[in-house]
Length: 237
Length: 197
Image (cartoon, rainbow over all chains, first blue to last red; front, side):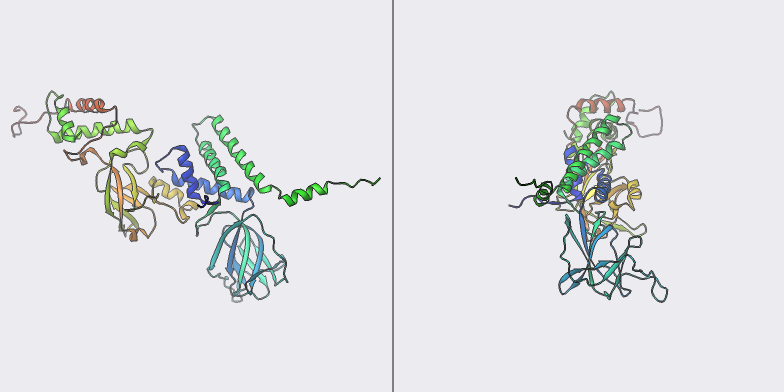
């Protein structure tokens, strides 16, 4: 029999909160959902290390559009014979904004998006297949080397919420986001006394700390390395 | 208790008995008042007062680009989103497919992430005596829904059971009697004179 899922939807978080509060009329459902979305986006920017993966097509101008939820990139790779080879970042590369005729460059619709979350990536270095630069303001990657119509694999930190696919959230964030929702609802209620708001903020702070401890925890290997680094070798008698 | 029995019981307390349909109007007003006072802190306890209407068609208002369903019965006015429409679902679904909102929320939430996220339940609100749905062209494919309504007393047949909130039976009768006392009595002679009975 399978265990409960490690990934949950934002709808599940809303329903879990309503269930805890004993609310059976979903009158404020979308209001609560929007608050949780904003809380999740805030967590992704400041507190967690969740990354997204994205696969896109390069257009005829040798550029590729980036997804709207990208905060910053982690790695950019090109598909070569069924493998992804990382590209080298070169921030001196110029990314033209218009083509030779002076028209704005258009980007083809991206053909697939992978919504796989991970804690971080280590990639084996291969022969560098080319270079890239990123214009975060315009949400564009430009390349050095001919990558037209190639598949490019981008790993990036995401704001977290997709408006194209169902957004899945790690189950570890369930209590954190419910605490955030509870806090914001109380904070915006002008009739509530300050003590209630402070208590809710404190509880959210506790949940936030748990997540940060979870994300920053050392692996056994890292712990042993830290312990060994502290050893000093005394002079042998 | 059936509606007719309740009306007869109330009529027996009146100094001048009224026609059942006239008394039904006062009963409706008293019932609405008691409903509000009983449930105003928790509207989740209205199951027994809810009736399910099946196969209500979803129609399309081309002029306003809105999908809607006409209300099959008059509902009570409740101070929550959705008023007397307690639930909307496709015929066999047991999931949260439709969620009541206030019509103003549509404008506020448009442009926010929540309005464009896939997999959302469909919002609905009550306007112009119909249930209006927000977005979703696949509503046309759904075609029909079931509505769960808290009906006005006027919609009850005379032989239909009225479920009075527990502990409020006497209050309902008293409130109706108070409203009905002082109402003009029924005229026995069909003329326009004020002087004949």
